[in-house]
Every structure is written in C-alpha cells, then in structure tokens.
Image (cartoon, rainbow, N blue to C red; front, side, top):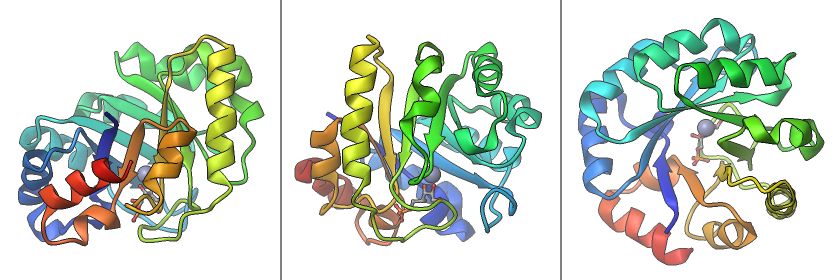
Length: 216
Ligand code: DX5
Ligand code: ZN
C-alpha cells in the first residue's frame, strides 16, 4: 500500500484546519507542505508558522518540501515547527551531504528533491544519507500542471540505483499525480504519492483517495 500525501497547496486556506482534518479522515498518510521562496521557484507560499499550525491540527506526518535557496538557514526552524520529513532541492544545495546531515541532526527524515531536468548522478554518492528521494514530475512552483512522462524512466532508474546500493529510501513522486498517472509511477517503483489538485479540487476526499489507491 502506497503513501498518499495530499499537498495543501491546493487546499482552501480560508479553512485550512478543516481541510487537514478532512484529508486525515479520508485516509491520507502524510501532509505535504510546499514551501516556496520566490527565488528558487517563481512563487511564494508559506513558512514555519504554517507547519506549526498544521502540527496542532493534524495527527499525520508532516512532509515539508523546501523549494528555497539556502535551505540550511531555515531547516532548524522547520524542524522545530514539527516537520517529520524535510526534502531539499539538489539544485539549491552547494553542500548537499552537509544539508542532509543537518536535517537528520533534528531527528527528521531527510530527502532530496530532483527537478525534471536534474540527473540522478548528483545523489549517487550520498545515498546512505537519504531517507527518501522526491522525483519532481512537473517543474516546481505551481499545482495543477501536467505530468512529465520522462519521470517514469527516471523513477525506474532510481529504483535500480537504490537497489544496487542496498538502500531502502522511499521514492516519492510529486506533480501531476492522479488516477491516470499513479499506476505507471507505482509500477516504476514510487511508493509515496503527492497529490494536490487531484485531491483538493474534488468534492469527496474519501472517494478520491480510495480511487487513487485503486488506480495504482
Ligand atoms: C509543485 C509542488 C507540488 C504541487 C503538486 O511545485 O511541489 O507538491 O502541490 O500539485 P499537483 O498535484 O496539483 O500537480
Ligand atoms: Zn511538493
């Protein structure tokens, strides 16, 4: 059974607490929180105070996806706010190994996110530092974009790479995940599925999450 992680980017922020409770009751596993700084990506979202607010309302693991430059400066704040998983972008980290150690020093699970154009080679020598790898299947910055098909091959290659190194890191896929795309990424080796618009833009979250699981 896969991990379903609704991205609150597509939630109704006038009632975020209700949205969080609704996806938890609907059978979600993690809450995915997209942090954007207007520099690494062309959009700005939210910071540690929203993570802290989510922590008070939700019993689910908080999965914080940092689409920000210089993440080291903010990792302690997100850890203190209650993040259970933190991913940083390989493209935004000069000293990726050190950044992953920093995340783990707070007892938070560490992940690396890779943009669609970024090769897997950048993580080959740091696999022992990884609890998960986030494969971006859209260009980061916005919800509701179309799934990029080449992500499937990338997930297959990642799966083989992790196996070669004896790693049990989770493969997460983020962007354009819906009932049409979830099966191929699951078959390719992904086990954690971020879905924003495919969940929050529907009227019945229980039915939607069950539908995603069934479509795998
Ligand atoms: C995009 C974010 C995603 C986004 C996915 O930069 O990282 O988490 O919320 O949205 P959907 O599922 O609508 O493609
Ligand atoms: Zn994300």
